[in-house]
Length: 90
Image (tube, rainbow, N blue to C red; front, side):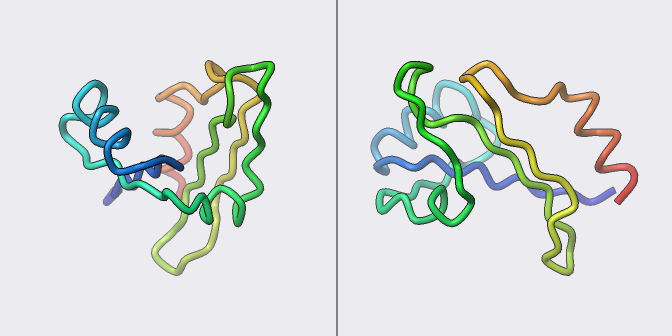
């Protein structure tokens, strides 16, 4: 299984660097100050639940989305085991 992570934060470079230092020391966090990516992916913003809701896409080497997940709260993200199972099937 060959997998590459591309975390994208719809925010400034400064805030992406803070997140990278705090959470993702092994992986760079890309930033999108224009917020074009979340708009393209229809990622929701719910102010009552903390802002932009989590979203995750698994895209194969041909560029086809094999899995899409849109959370309903900031804590609503798939478990690692779920993601590993999906990646094994691709």
